[in-house]
Each structure stands twice: as structure tokens, then as C-alpha cells.
Image (tube, rainbow, N blue to C red; front, top):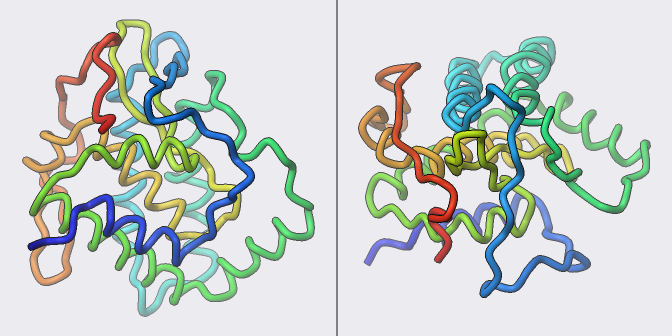
Length: 223
């Protein structure tokens, strides 16, 4: 029996970065109130920006990528994917500020072990997407919101989706996971139709597609 997607993600997620036990997320019986996106930005725009960042990340060569290339991705497609939703009232990744030295050390770790980090992130993407294609389990949305990996959002037309969040600890695999999940949870049918994985090679068949997403009042994918 295949392992459900939610278990696959948490096996990886727990190994990638410890989850703070001091957080006090809402109970499973409560429905999270979505954050309103800026006027003119819809949930498909957010998902599409996340997908563009993932595609750009996959184009990095794990064997030869260097710090300047990864920095260019972090300051370019990745930053853009976060910025499109961050003009709204998205909550900070942690209510307790992290010491600047700790944040700096984590960032140095990402850029010091570039090839290992990029390889680990690509492996994580593949595992999550393979599991998603085999047996989608979108109930993972609740847990990913609870652990501040993605944020439930709505646009001015009442549609619901998910936006990526910057992690409390800037581990590269967690950053990329957030992008993948924001796209996957907002447009699961579109992702299945436009994604192929062959021998570890992940390919998006199209970079811009429209998608039908739920409207407010029908909160998606909370198990």
C-alpha cells in the first residue's frame, strides 16, 4: 500500500527542520480565516508565481550550481513568489524574532553547501510530487498551514488558494516545499495535467495555464 502524501511530506519535513512545539495553532475543528490578497492579485497569480520559481529552481544544475546562481534564484524567482502575496497582511513566519546571528548562520549554511542543499531540495520535490501523482492527499493542507509552510488566502473575487511563506529557519528544501505546496494545493487538477516525472526528471508541460479554484465558503482541502 503506498504511503499517503501527508506521511511522505512529514517524514521529509521533520528531518529537514524541527517544528516548534511552542506554537498554538487552531484546533482541527476550527476553520482558518483566509488572508485577503492585494486588490488585483488573485490566487492563480500566486500559484503561478510559485510554479515559475519551482521551474527556475529545477533548471539549476545540482552538480555544478554555485552560490551566485543560487543567490540569483533566491533574490529573483523565489523572492517574486513571496512578494506577490506579501503586500497583503500575511503573518510573519514566527511571532518570536530570531537572533540575527542565528539567521545569518542559517543563510551561510545554505550558500556554503550549495550543491548538497540544491540536491536535497530536488529530491524532496520529486518525492512529494511522485506521491501526489500516485495518490493525491490534499488533506495535508491543514498541517502545512499549521506549521507555517503555506498560508490560506483569498482574493477580491472570493476564490481560495494558498501562498508560500518564508520559513522560520531558511533551509532551502523548506523554501522550495512551500512553493510546490502553494501551487499543488491551489490548483491540484491543473498540476496533475501539466506535470510529468520520468526517471527523476520533473517537467512542467506548460508555464502558464488558467485554473478553476474554489470560492470562499468552500474552504479547500482541509481533512
